[in-house]
Amino acid sequence: MARRPVVELAPGVWRIPLVGDWVNGFAFRDEDGQVTLVDFGLKSSAKKVFAALDVIGSGPTDVTRILLTHAHPDHAGGAAEISRSTGRAMDIHEADAQYLAAGASPSRDTSMLLGRLFNRLGGGGFEPVPVGERLTDGQVLPVNGGLRVIHTPGHSPGHVAFLHEPTGVLITGDSIFNVLGMRWSIASFCTDFVMSKMTAHRLTEIEYRIAAFTHGPEIRDNPSGAIGAFLAKHPL
Image (cartoon, rainbow, N blue to C red):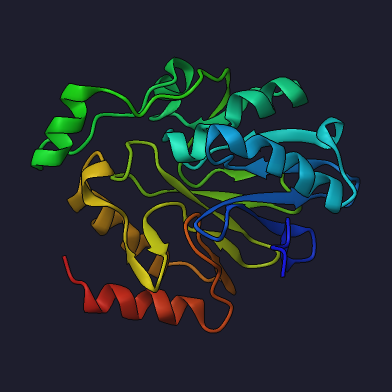
């Protein structure tokens, strides 16, 4: 069976599988037809974003805001093409804005050998993207009734989750993966892995009805309980 180009999470909210269920983007549509896109996968993923827009009856001209959870190439790889096609700059947390503009990932965790090696070798780049609004923690964006910015640094300095308050859909970002079960993100890819684990606990302080992961399928059945149980089994 062919994979669906979009998965509806709630009315006006979709997950866009970009590399199977392994890497995901998201779309929100307001009642007036305005579309907000979140995360864009690898460079080759832009065409899947456009295909998803077509499936939900929208197009690039309907996109009025584009957002990024953080400046890593598996999320920002397709961002430049999306930005050019929609004519929109990209909104990102203020602490990651400089990296998006430069097309470079933040430094990796220097407490780890692999992190130090990645820093010396370079790589992890993507095409630079014009930065729009610099987001801050707690900010509520006018996206389909309200999308709250939740700063969860560590995976990158400006890593964020997004909570869509009307539907209770939480986009976790890379704080936690749901790939073959819940797990931490890859430690050596983080700027500060210990901090990433600490700030993931912010996800237990909010209410939501669906946990939508940037890596892995969503959890619809008691997602806050599932994430809470994972965190309890993996103490700092």
